[in-house]
Image (cartoon, rainbow, N blue to C red; front, top):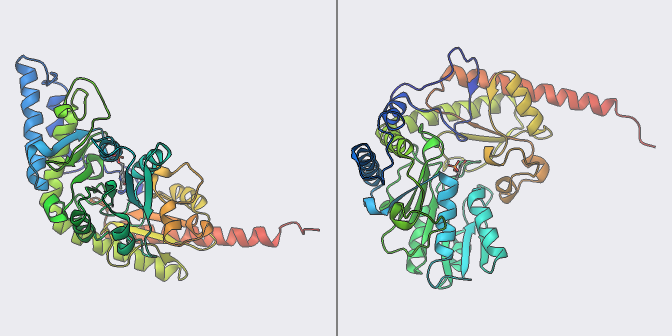
Length: 401
Ligand code: PLP
């Protein structure tokens, strides 16, 4: 993995790699010619365009190799959200699937949750499968939900908020017995967990480059050969008619380069990150003894710490951390701005109040032990300060008559 491009002299500690990652310098170097010297439209007939077409084809082949698919099974999209939408809507509208059942776990990303609930409001039967207190799917409920009437069943590989890794192989095997296509949202897993689609047993798989040191706005939907799909973006017939629109050539090249880099260092990097993750959690726990870890203790992403601090408002905590130079997230970055408690945290049994007192820290390429120790200090100090302030506010609150 090459050097990363980042702000010179930035004092900020970035612990929000689950939200997005900086672009690797080698990825940028691979992309740049396709924005400037070779800017042709891959569908045009002349030389520079043919070069762009060749670059897209080569990238498709590289991605296919890296995830264990055939090039014809790789469809480029504008990212993870579009890939998830295409998986659900593409299956829901495929021949003979109209009005059937759409199954999804209770902790899916909003890209899946909102697509499923939209379909639920428009004639499909949207079924949600619950998870346990660690965020792991209830396999009996999954088994019961899947039937001949299921157009697609979605189970994410690893959760973006609490980091819990799902037993996707077992879930996909059950789906296969019932002839149900399975969509696995692998957006958070790439670069951290193995992503060979045959080993996972899935029929549809999503990934998004900006989560693994590639550019934003480019992703992939893998579609297993023989899985009937209907396009939901119509136009010039690109991506074999399933996803129209002029190809994002530089993005596609960048995605392939980023995936190759991420896979090359995945095991070593996952091992390094899991030590940092554990150091972070241990540090927080020793400074704030009533903090509790959300998500599975061991079956979790190597980069994720999600923690609740009883009585502390998560949004105020984030603002405090930002002031002290630590970038983190409360719940999921994709839902930040909304005041509703995270559906993931409430699905694992947290009260709305506890869900709102949670913080997600995620480590990555540039994180060092010194960053972790500094982050522990910043978080613990901010929690103490907010609790102190809350105590004072209570003491001096006007007496209610
Ligand atoms: N799925 C998961 C699990 C995610 O974490 C995200 C982004 O946070 C997405 C889907 C959406 O991906 P994108 O940001 O590429 O639209």
